[in-house]
Image (cartoon, rainbow, N blue to C red; front, side, top):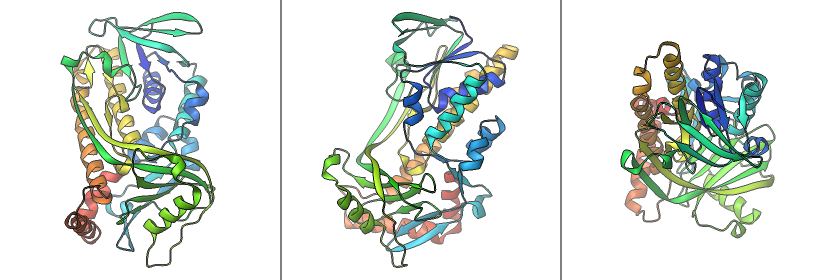
Amino acid sequence: MKTQVVIVGAGPAGLLLSHLLHLGGVDSVVIETRSRQEIEATIRAGVLEQGTVDLLVDSRVGERLQREGFVHEGIILRFAGRSHRIALTELTGRAITVYAQHEVIKDLVKVRLDAGGKILFEVKHAALYDLDSPAPQVRFHREGKVHEIEAQFVAGCDGFHGVSRPSIPSRHRQEFARSYPFGWFGILVEAPPSTAELIYAHHERGFALVSTRSPQIQRLYFQCDPQDDLKAWPDARIWDELHARLANAEGWKLDEGRIFQRGIIAMRSFVVEPMRYGRLFLAGDAAHIVPPTGAKGLNLAVNDVRVLSSALVQYFKSKDEQALKGYSATALKRVWRAEHFSWWMTSMLHRFHDGTPFQHRLQLSELDYVVNSKAKALTLAENYVG
């Protein structure tokens, strides 16, 4: 098989890249190790920046997003028993939209298949070859046969554990990483919304977050040991912990419901430089990971493919490689800004295992400064909405 761009990974980055290339007249093939049912059922966070929403709408993938997404014009910071609103739209003129990542994937899969796009699900043993040549190849097993795709470029959109990044020789890449000594215990709950806007809570017992997925489904998190055992957290203990961390002096109450999904998310920061090797370009989680506190993961992936798709379309229209040569530097500028913001939010809101009363007071002072200084609130708001 031959194509112009072969895309490894059918997550948001790979699917959106394929769609944007199609709109620009560039052919692509997407390969994915999981089934369509698996990728459409994997529930992840879904805070979309204004720019992400605008791109999806402008590229004609945003009809359901506009109909079903929750537009939020602010977020709540809660600490010392009191709530403080950061007015995102008032400060920046922009908003965020809560719309789960798997819903974005459903929309992208549909629009690609409706347009006759090639998405090969359930491939095995994918391997990348000749990445530093004009004709890179991807080989894999599917339905009992060995397949090979020859392309002019390869886009590695297969996540942190995919094959794309390790295909770059170690001497040609530099990796930056930080692991955090805590994780997030996340639950999905059948309950009405307890809040109109996301609540980020700082507490002596640890961080907590109240989000929403639909009028009937809520998403809640609390800081935990990343090695914790799910069985050690029966429903009653989960609710006790959430009530303790989210308690305030204003009469607000968290609504309980049936917990139908639970899991622990590890927290880490990661960046690889550069995001290109030969004819291979990395995008999304294959190139960078951010802790979820800043709500940047999906949005960074969208920005990567926005930049990459434009550069590839420019190349195939005019053979001009300048934008492709600048892809890594352009994308990394945004990546490092998001890494810093996510680190800052994480450091300000979480309890560290080696934290002292002095450090705790510093966190409270920082939070107080954020909610009482328009300049500091604007810094948070600008970064949060993108």
